[in-house]
Image 1 (cartoon, rainbow, N blue to C red):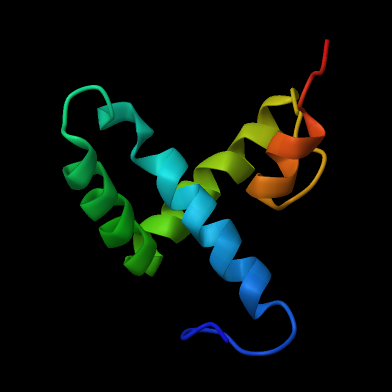
Image 2: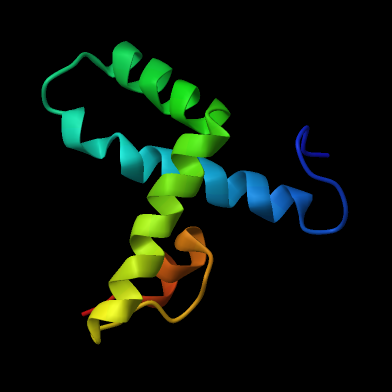
Length: 85
């Protein structure tokens, strides 16, 4: 069970937050060693205010008129947008 939420969706919320944390720190991935990247991802995962702000950034993209987000979960969105050739 997730430590900050309860109920049936706790596991999905934790996976969604982990996915969002990975996305939030990916800009620095070429500049730092892998261990530092993991530490930054963990720090972001534990900073719920930063996650809420980053999630708000994704929500604000919908107001621009162009939207390719078909599901609200970032993990599932990557799977849904997967192109197999």
